[in-house]
Length: 141
Image (cartoon, rainbow, N blue to C red):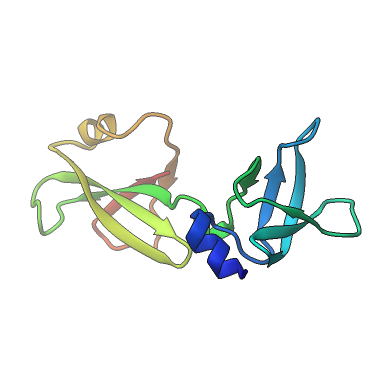
């Protein structure tokens, strides 16, 4: 059976080269998926020379790929944007790989201090860059 069959039948993100953690022994061990055969994944555990067959759902944790990671959340504060004249607006942006998009998550206030207080806690301020659009005051990640 193929890797595609295993992905579809067992609903797991198995693919060649994917890192996994096997938790069926005395201690968890990391490994790499090498191939699939007979409904099992052939995995080479770190430090081993040969692969062994593992059931796709039994004590296997599929480690996140770069593409599986949550996007970076960034808040951009603008002053006097065209959609909210005379206001300070904090807009959440999500950055995923090479893509970035504004969300509908917006905070609006009359002052910079007030809109800053509306941001989620524990963010770090990034000062405005000279190349930023003129309405951008600062950003927070």
